[in-house]
Image 1 (cartoon, rainbow, N blue to C red):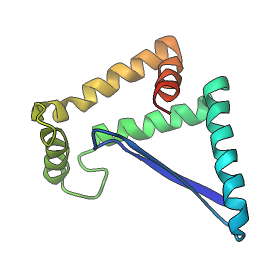
Image 2 (image 1 turned 120 degrees about the vertical axis):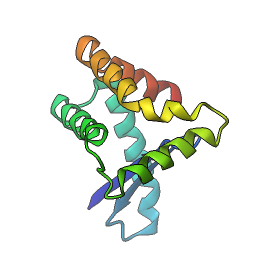
Image 3 (image 1 turned 90 degrees about the vertical axis):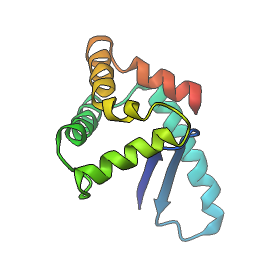
Amino acid sequence: DDYFGGLQAYLRQWVLTIGVSGISDEDKVGDARIRIKQRIFKIVEEGFDDAALKGTLNKLDMRFREQSSSGAPVGVRMFKDVLTIWTYDEDPRKALSYSKVFAALKKEIEENGQGVLLQVMTKHM
């Protein structure tokens, strides 16, 4: 009936979760897995829908511009971001410059298209 998912990028090894609802027969779970993989391959082959990509980039952009898009106080969100980096013995200040990194990615996509995203998908999925 519907699909949902998310990307957990705070661990060294990222975790992509994709789920579906409305499967009433356990025998059809394998079919759902196949269809999900086919859809991912189709996206890599054909690219993302331009309007959907633009909307997603705008949503992410707002996360970096707003004081607190998660509902948590901005200090708590920043501390969580710092701990995520610091856990792996990296410079915790890197976590505070994500908006600059995102701006560079957004510029790359605007100038050269979505190829950079499709390359990441191909390499890591």
